[in-house]
Length: 244
Length: 323
Image 1: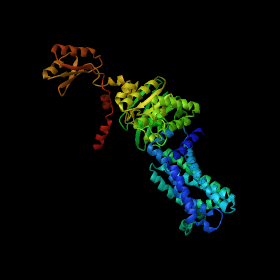
Image 2: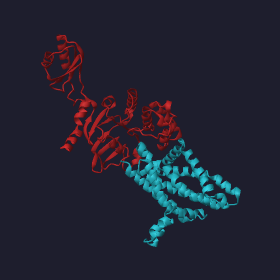
Image 3: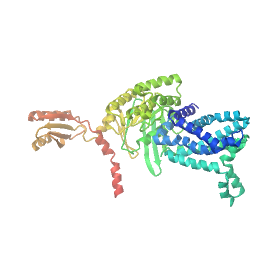
Image 4: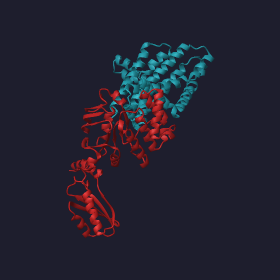
């Protein structure tokens, strides 16, 4: 546990030791706002809730979170510090989890800093704050899913750009797997069960369910399982790739 | 404190380390020598639990590195090749991280960091990002990291690589100071280093141990061992070489002219015998003949020559490939 905490603190501190954290947070907040107010037509919608705001999260995460996760392992491998990290008395799971949690908490900080949105809707009207809280929780879980995928793919390569591009691609598949463009591809020939399985992998399906204000245990289990599975895969990849 | 038995590492069809076995006791400084790619770093990576061996075992202070990796890693201090560190951190932040991972309490960590910083003379750069430091300082950050928890076993992969002569001297002094109470393994291909700090040298080539002994014992395997080197100024003639060759106990003689001077290397018939008699005889002859002597000494042996004669298999393999 000590080791997990040490890795976590080092990683989280690492974000703030460079301009990365500030640039990321500024751009994150700026695009969130711009998307919500201009692209989403927030004022025109005339509704005092954050549905429009949350609808943009998956698409923004798709590009911004792989930028966070790409360095997690690729950089360790490139600089050789992975040899130091893994020859220290740190269990592999603690290293994997510590790094992931640091990235997740960092994305959580960025997400929390969107609180002026929440203040705005409360100023404008009387939104259901329970629904908004659920939206934030769902968004946070979804961010964890993206980061777990990115973390695993970051361990596959020592090149951060490859890690980024592949992560975006895989995250994209996980995001859209419930949308018609994917389902239509299968619907002609695949049985219904396969269709619903593919659709159930979609981040959007589960995220939208949560943002409606209903935190269904199945959606939570989905994200937790997904994060767990990708992190286990990450551990296996890190272990396998040590020699290379 | 380190016991290695039948250690083997295969990467696919390639055998990087081939059934190596040796042990290191407290107070020993083992110099691990070998050409690039001989398996030095791979062996060290297996000792420190970074790589899992394909076969064989490593025990460090009684802990099996494969079965109880973490327990073994706790008693090891390791400086990986190239001294990697987290470049965006300062040495202070980095050492604090290591102290936390090593489960030192806040008070212990403070003391341990002070001690390591003093030993590696890092105080002046303690709060600069590691990325901005010179190679010498970065190497010392790595050293500080490896000795932070005062480990009984120290594994260092090329600890003086890339340092200037002064820094090398300091690092060797540091290793020398710690030697008495630790078991230390250093890899190097700087042969003078072996003579300077190692109590024992182990040469590996193509994953196998080809020599194991004290630096002096290794040097005695050199054909230069107990040879006498004589440098004369001015013009020398064939007659000079002839007179030297006619001294008793001389097996052969090599002549190497260099500018205004000529160096004669005299090989004794029995290399195992002490060279003082031969040096005396040469000195007497030079005095009688009134030669202008620039230098005269008995050779202890040349480590680089032993090294080359033992690790030539690279060229052999090349020849085989060509054939």
